Image 1 (cartoon, one colour):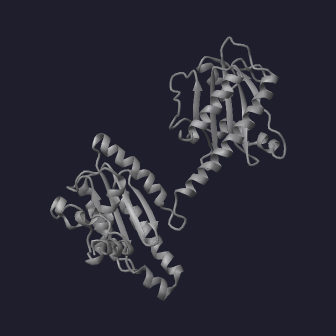
Image 2 (cartoon, helix red, strand yellow):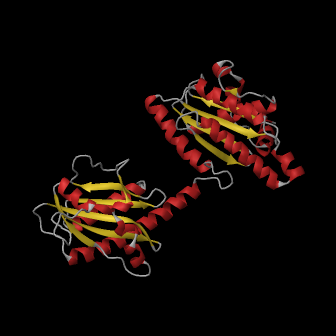
Image 3 (cartoon, one colour):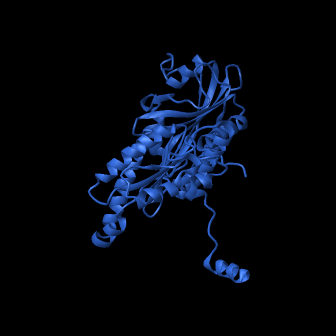
Length: 365
C-alpha cells in the first residue's frame, strides 16, 4: 500500500493544480504565521526563478508588506466569502507614480507580468494565501480568473483541513497520551525500517529497553496520580538523554516499560547514554531507579534476521538487569558473544505449554 502524501506534498499538489487550472506558469502557497508576523512560503510550484526553492526553508515576508492579508480584508472575510484579486507589473498608484506594492516589485524583478492572489481561509480565519502568476507578455488575469481562484483557494483550504485531521489522527495513533513519547506501534514501525537498513547497508541499530522500578509501590501507597507523575518524570529523562543520540526515538511501550531506539550511533555511545539514564533515574525522588537492557548490532550478538530478535535480546538484558538489581545497563553479547547468558536466554526455544508436555510424556510412556 502506497504511503499517504506528506502535508507539504499535499500543499504542493494544490499549488500545482491551481497553476494548471488558471493557466499560470508559477504558483505558491504561503501560511500566515501570526506569532511571527510574517507570510512564510511553504511551496513554490512551476517555473521558478533564481532564489526560489521548491520547499523553501527560509522564504518569508513581513505581513505589514501585505496588509490585505491581515487587516481590512480579514475583517471583511469574517462571516462572508473572501475574494481574490489581481495585480500586474504595470500597476501605478492613484497619483500616477510607480506603485510601491511589494508584490508588483516582485513581479517585475522575476519577469512576471501578473498574478492573482486568493486568500485561504480555514476555520473562519485567514490561514494564508494562494498565489498564481503568468509571465510578462501573457494575457492578464481577469475577474473571471479571480473568481475561479477564490474557488480553488476554498478547495485548497478543505484539503489542508483534511490533512491536518489526518496528521492529528496519525499523531494520536503513534503517541503515548500520558507521556507524549512514541508508543509501541511507532517503535514497531521504526524498528522494522531500521532492521531493513541494517541488513541492506550494515548501519548500527541499537535498542534500550527500560523497566521503571517501584511504580507499583508508588501506585499502591501514594495513588495512581503520583505514579503517573513518576512516569512523566522518567519520560522526560529518557527524552533528555536520548537527545544526545541523533535521531533517537524515545517511547513508552506500556505500563512501566520504556525504550530508546537508535539508528547510526555506535553501541558504545548508546551504552554511555543508557548509563547516564540509569544514574539520573536513581536520583528521582519517587521510584527505585530503572533496569536497562541493551541490544545492539554493534556488539557480538550474532546475525540479526528480524526486529523481533533484537527486541528479545534487549528484553532479556533488561530482565537480567532487573533480577540483579543492576545500577548500570546490561548489554547483550558483552559476556562471551553468542555464549553470553543474555544471548542464550533470548535465543532459547520457547518451552511447550504444560498440557503439551504432559501429552508428550504420556506418549513416551
